[in-house]
Amino acid sequence: MRVKDIMKTDPVTLRLDNKVEDIFEVFKKHDIGSVIIVEGKKPFQIITLRDLARICYLNLYRSSVSDVLKALNKNKDSLLTVYYNKSFFDALNLMNKINLK
Image 1 (cartoon, helix red, strand yellow):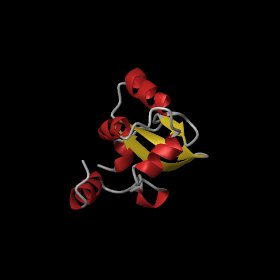
Image 2: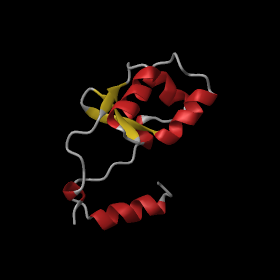
Image 3: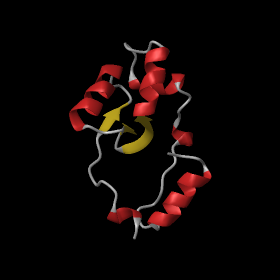
Image 4: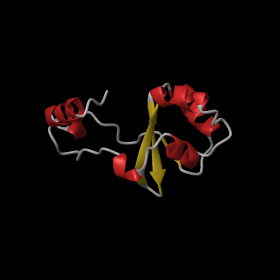
């Protein structure tokens, strides 16, 4: 099985200039656990449900997504991607290797 066999082809995304309230809205509206942040059309970073607690703790309610990513120390270089033609099990092994849940 390949990554392309299980991946979403039209994921929910937000832009760097979106606001924090948009993050909460898409999580609720789409019942999802993560949202991809894009720069143009390219993935820039990801925000997960686990990040929401830190966003609240840091009092970033009125911030832009860009400011949130800076506060969470998430930048473009820290985004892990996997090619769609890779084996699903290779992707799982990579996630396990870096303790990604």
